[in-house]
Length: 347
Image 1 (spheres, one colour):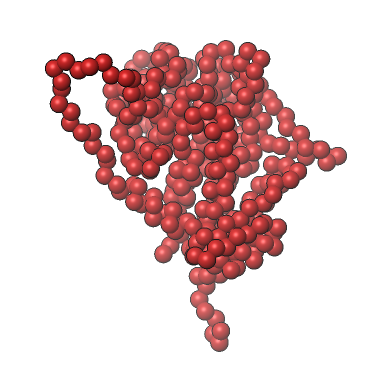
Image 2: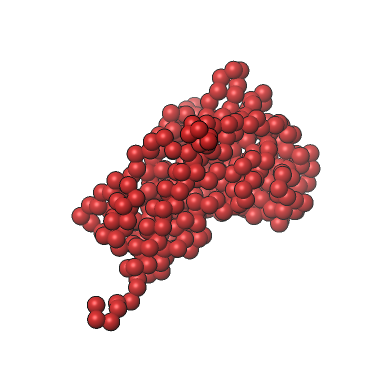
């Protein structure tokens, strides 16, 4: 069996980060869970890749036919109220281009997956509404569309080069549920600097730090820069993070400061390519030895593909964390290549 390509790896990463948090505390726990999942994924990537294939080929759920009642009794609300941004006018430099906005609203979506069970679900096409459309720094044109699915809400992020028509836009990120209970951030991480867009309530300010850095005297510091407001949204060019959790984004509202956890990345973040060199499932004996030698705590259970590893995070900078994570990926790559090497004569 061959290793999954970059598209599959990126899809796995996107599936791992899907889901709409119900509260800030739940989101923080989800962020920790995502990190733990990413540590385990390379040792069990075969099963995950099969799961992606199954999910991608599953039949679309059909809505059951319901016979209309002559006099239906009052029913409790079963659909979550739309987030405020849905009911507000579109934001962005192209918000007044009604032709472009209407064409973007009509763009088809790829399959939306239920974060609870991974099954494909349908959006309600007639609820699609553009909440943001603009030419953003870096030569991009972005559009964000929102729609209802079942009792919840989801977003689709479309992108293209500056000046692109609606038909020339493609999905920058697969359709994903959005709680709408806090700001949503979008970042292009394909270069060392890229645009960061934050959709927040009017009057909310934002500040972003790409990394925790070590000063020459050994101290760890994090510098934040404010995000300017542009056409109704927070938008600026920022340094992109070196690992998926290196950056920190905060909203400031009426003197209260809270972290924004819903950040979607497009482009090719560096961490998405670290496992691209794997040629197959790693040899767990070799992998465990390599990870242990790097200081990771390794737990290899009795079954194939159940090896997990962790690292007690101490005082380290984002660059140091990235180097550690990259070294773990190198262990996986080497262990998978050693497994696929042909036997040497006389061995």
